Length: 474
Image (cartoon, rainbow, N blue to C red; front, side, top):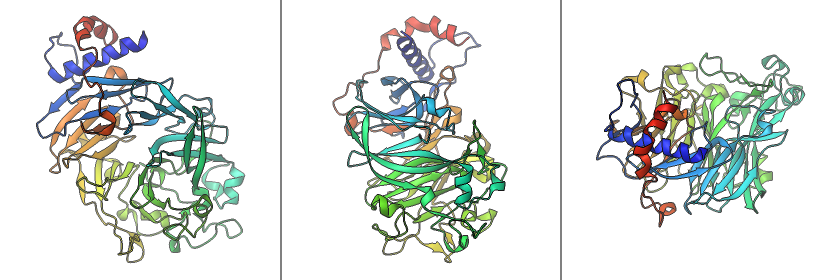
C-alpha cells in the first residue's frame, strides 16, 4: 500500500509541476516537476533514485512516470538502466554501515528486471570492508565495485602514515574489484586493485613506502593532507574512522581498457590500467601500460604529488568523473562535476582533454604537472552562486551535444547546450526529500527501452489524489 500511495504522489506532483495547470491555494509551492522543456532538449527518459527512498524512478520529458523499481534498501548510491532493460543499483541498509560509516555507504549491489524482479543480490559488506557510492557494468557482464577496506592505526603507521595526522584512529582505504555474477547471491572476484599497493611517503625512512614523493607522481602520498577549509582530506566518520581517499565514482573505457576514479578527499581524478592481472595490479610492472597498477594519470590537485601550488588546484570535492563515450560530441574527453569550484564558492561542470603522446601515454607538463591547465569546456550558472551542490551530483554528455547536469543537493536536473543555455529543467518534489546521487538520460533508441511499455503510469488516478498530496505536504 505504501508503494502505491508514494507512486501516485510522485506522478501527481511531477505532472502538475510540468503543466502548472492545476489551481491550488496561493500557499501551495508548485516549484517542482518540469520547469522548462524547450525544443532543443534531447528527447528521452531520465532515471534517478532519491537517497531517502527505496524506489528508483524513470520519467519522460514531461516529468511523467514510466517505470519504477523498488528495493528493500535505500541507494548506496548509483543506479543505471542497462542495455537489457535491467536496473543495476547499489543499495545501502546494512548492519556493517554502522561499523564502517563512511559517507555514501552501500554494502549491496542488486540487479532488477524491467518488471522489478530481483535477479542478483550481492553483498559487499563485512566487518573489514564495505561497498560504497558507484558501480560499473562492464562489456563482459562483470561489475566493477568501489569498496573501503578498514585498517588499524598500527597498520597505517606501518605503511608510513604520520600518527599525528589521525590521532590513533582506524582508516578507510579504497579499493576497486571486479566481480562476475554467479547465482542469485554470489559472485567470483576476478580482478582487484588496492590503494594500499601504490603508496609513497617521505615522513619516516624506517617505515614502508619511503621515497621522494615529488619524483613519483604515479604513487599516492599516504600523508597528503588538504588544509583548505572547504575540502579537508581528513574526514572523521561516526565510529572514529578516517575516510582518507573517498573514491566516489568509477568509469570504464573499453577502447583503452582503463578505469577512471574520482578521489574526492584528494581533490583529483586518477586513471589506472585495467589490462592487468590482479598480481600485476598490485605491483608496478605489467599490463598494457607496462606500469602495473600505478597511476597512469591524475588531474585536479598537483599538490598531492608535491608539484605546483594552491593556484594550480582545479578540483574541489568533485564527483562523477567519466569518459565521454564513443559516438558522442567530445568523445574520449573527460567530464566531471566540480562541486566546490573556486574553493567552494560555487559548482561547475568541466570537460577536459588529457594530453597524450603518440603511444597514448599521459603527459605531465614540464615533466611535473599533469595537464591540461584549464578545461576545454566549463558550465557554471550565469550567476555562479545560483549553481551550488557541495555533495553528490554529476554530468552526462548527450547525443545532441547537450549536457545533462545533476545538481543533487537541490534536487534539480538540468540540460544545458554547449552555449550554456538551459533547455530542460526538472525539480524532484521536495516532499520526497529530493536529494539524489545523480541522474541519467536514455534516448528512445536505447536498447534497454526496446519493446517496453513507456506509457505514463496511473495517469487517470492523478485527479483523485489531490487531497492526499495536500495532506502529506501541508
